[in-house]
Length: 204
Image (cartoon, rainbow, N blue to C red; front, side, top):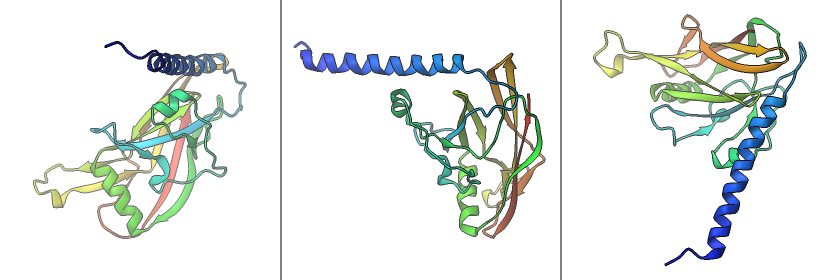
């Protein structure tokens, strides 16, 4: 039995629109040009367990520092189909501007917020962002299992300092990498209030 013409037409239209959205993202990214000090868009997208990429949540479902001007990005069809949830991120990565140990915010995590982060770290949660339409991934923290056979003895740590390495060619961003500082951690093993100073650095 053949596929009804109406169904076939709908499928073709969806594919064409999806391809158009993808092409638009790529062409927009290649057309972006900046001068020193220009603001380059950075959006937080989602978080989720590394070993189950189909399970994702909004970035700010976890108690991260909120940006001064919180807003949602109007998403293209391809982003919607991909499950993206783009919102403004708290980091400011202006073009060609290096930063060293910039404080995002200082906050006291409640016991409930500590438990949220600990659960995420125990499941190897990663975060995803987009910088000038380039995807970035990183982990939230780590579990110290060394020399510990009993899981009840594991220690849980949250990364509080992340570093951005950004590469450019003349007036364009061409690549970005993110890494965490293994020496800048806060322990979140116990259910108690924890003071955290979230920071970041940038190198062009």
